[in-house]
Length: 436
Image 1: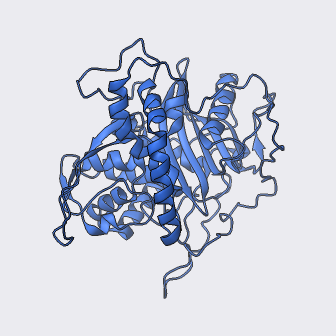
Image 2 (image 1 turned 120 degrees about the vertical axis):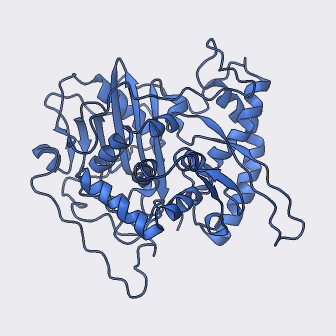
Image 3 (image 1 turned 135 degrees about the vertical axis):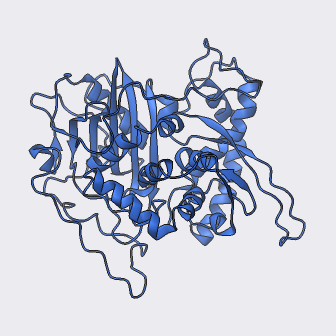
């Protein structure tokens, strides 16, 4: 079972090239690698066959996510199959959020085209106002977006300056790994960087070990969800790897993200483009092994680099969950959150679908609403929650103000493409042989 495609893992590795390229060619005017053009109408001009967004009017996911396509959710021998979570009645957030199709304010314009997400929602980060949605309480798998719940637990429990020694068990976890090695020394702050920026399952394992192990950590994550009235959510693993009973909804994911944004370090890390990550020593059990030096890691959220006003967010993918996404952006003093569940990379990449929905939400009347996020947990997020600036360069200077935003990352991407392509082909062939 795969937690993410190998191209997403490569996004973290591109940080190594960005560190060189941003210094070597800081003044080059490079266009975006994946340009996003805000739509001027509600229709698409693509020449490819039209795409039909999955219909959810009959509430197919009211109680359970879609059937799995692999064996990742088969309970261990002797373990029971989890029962479906109860469906709250009336629907949490308001009567209209109990609807399963598209939910729009009265008089709202047509939705943008090319949205493949089966379920989605747009809400106001500060007020909790829900602007628009599709199957908001439908139950789907979260993939790595459930790491938002893990981050809430960890950031409120662990000492960020404590040093953790990496283990072979960390290095051996399935799915996306940032590159923790046995004997490496990592602060909890660095583990959180790896978790939030690069979706490292090895980082999730190292964090969960400090919280009492996977089972205890999952229980803490589920307790947080319940306290926030995210009643469609049940974590089965700390990392988002699919497991028996795993579930969330577009509504719940918005609730969890809003709560996480009360934590300054979470808000900082989702907005951070690149940081340095420690290496680890040579393994004495491997003849000829040498010390493994540290390396830069980069944020894998493309919306952060390509959407004006992007605050940051979290990506996810498994074979059963498909593409999942939660992110926020700010425009004219308003901050909106968008969530996508069970999306695909066609007809547009998930971050582009999210951008179109954010554009739609920002264009709605300021009083438009179809529901509300619950007023539980921490106090409502205020616009003054600190966000991080892009990290300084190696010479301790900030990116020059006259340069286009994120230009260094784009330069790095162009320079890195030939090297990364070869590496991905070799790495992908190996992963296809052994699975993840």
